[in-house]
Amino acid sequence: MATQSAELLEGPPGTARFTDLPARDKDVEIWLPHTEITELIALRTDAPVVPAPDSGRRVWLHHGSSISHGSNAAHPSAIWPALAAARGEVELVNLGFGGSALLDPFTARAMRDTPADLISLKIGINIVNTDAMRLRAFTPAVHGFLDTIREGHPTTPLLVVSSILCPVQEDTPGPLAPDFADGTLRFKATGDPAERAAGRLTLDVIRHELARIVEQRAADDPNLHHLDGRELYGEADYAELPLPDEVHPDPAAHRRIADNFARLAFGTGGPFAPVTGG
Image (cartoon, rainbow, N blue to C red):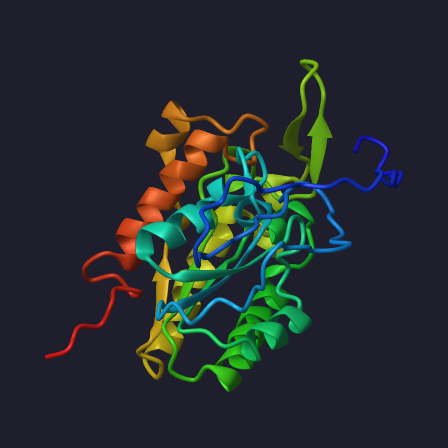
């Protein structure tokens, strides 16, 4: 990471066996590792299998950064979106991309074309830590991303969520750099806070702009909602469950974020709360 170089080492094929399963019809879910690239070579069974029937649950389509991808989570079903989906009793389609939540148009098109009952976007941290754009470019990029999604989901509940608290990037622009000063991997922001006046982005700047954009658009889009990410993980959470590398939450913090998201989004009065018949 310090030299920005990479080497690909292919591992040997292996076999995972799931034995002692009950001899009856059952739903089988296989969660592939969220921290490795996995190639499925073959899938074998000792009895016929069929696609799982429709669960009847709503489909939640989520896009975010490495935090949504699951960095530092204990296992793939313990990343915060997976935990929140279980609490909200929905089916998750997770488009969390480590280092790549950058308002890319192809991601918006993929979301536009993916069936979903609920949609959320976690925007901020990657744009700041890559120093990818300035405020002048960020605002129309957000509008364009939302416009594209709305082409395929004109009335679907859509929740825009800003970044969780990340002290190193709250008021200091990127780019982010690894820091091994104490012998462990941590991250530090390398930008100049004084350049915010010239349009350099920080998490605080992005949060205010996202809130403004959503408020503006919600006048004509009542199904568009905003959530400040610090309500998922804020100063009190940081004091109790600090970010080990100053950017990514640990397993306990993933659970905290999931609990707060489930309460605020899926709970009573939330944008994703189940609609009950009258």
